[in-house]
Image (cartoon, rainbow over all chains, first blue to last red; front, side, top):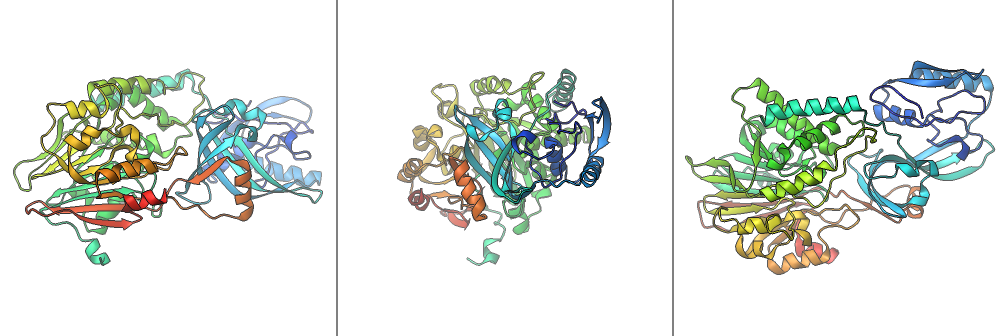
Length: 203
Length: 374
């Protein structure tokens, strides 16, 4: 788990074989690399952030493992990540699998039962289109199971993966967001704001 | 009716009740006479993205800033407050009212948690925006009183000098309902190390504000989402039993909680509304069980032939065949929530002994027709 800056996001990061991290290009979905052989690293939630923030740059403090195995923390922007990724790809001369997205939703879990959950879905390609689905738990990767709770947020992508070797695979991927946790200082701040507001409006 | 006639503003002595509902969402707009308007809750037109009451007022040439006298948020659930902040912003002269249950520390904290959470949805975020707007106004304008806090048998707005005379009274929440609400909401507050999950509306709804509108001798009962409970100190029973509630019977009834069985109290129909009233409901297409169910619709249609729904069943969105195939394979159930906006409008001259005129606009339809489709 990476600790990121104040308001933001805990990110799951899987390091590639080379011991470096890379941000995948936008064509790759958010998946741990061991589920897609040959695919390099995904910086899942960071890319999702980029989508949400619609091109705005955010600063993350990201832990980086250098080629010699040293771990250091530094501040980088998303744009830098993308540029680095591009440079790595060009220098290594390798090609990546490509994901062709056909549909994407953002979902919020509203109810969880033993073997399924119900979620409200916002179609990210159409404004004001709200849908609802009951999804079996078995569609969720094991690493995300603990996150399936009412109020949890996830992305659901449907599309094709065009493999480097020429295969095309139809894919449905559900990935839960690693949401930041409330810290004691943040809770205190919220309570103070609420108290002030209540004092003004209620007395 | 031509569009010109359809979108004419009501006359000075014409009472209008407009109920908007796009299949997920509800808003009621009432003309109290002489261009005085009441907005109850807010929903958004899925096509335009605009709050339905503001869109309609603009269409009939009414300026919300002056004309809207009272904005009531009956409760904090998503489907009743979409676009509410814009309404409060634009209706700068209106008094804002919500349930007294929301004066508790816990609710204010919840609103602020939602504001700070990165995952907030338009629901509670609207409320926290509204509270901020009201606080700014109160700090900026000494004469600003708001907000008002609705409770059982409290007069929220009254016109006693200029006809048509009118009065808007809240019939809930009772102290029992407020206590239930407090217990419910406390469990939603996050603790240290909890993830910043989105707030999910909890049921049943204990704190909803039911409104009684009286213009001259015509009465309207707006049932919000209040549900009945076995406890006689909460739900609809406490309202029916209340000795202080305004007298008379309503000829228009906004059926509570989308016509659900849980919100049905037969004594409301026998003691608070006229025989065969005009009954309007907004459907609710969430939770994998739509409301009203077929049985709900049939039950209401047995009580009155003048029953209407603001929306039809939602149409399934057509997508790429690969996507549709995958949806079928992955999910057990999948459906669209939002429908096109529907609008049931009732108008009646209060200075004459006229009956109600009903216009079904957009996707609105008689409830017995909806019942056949369910």
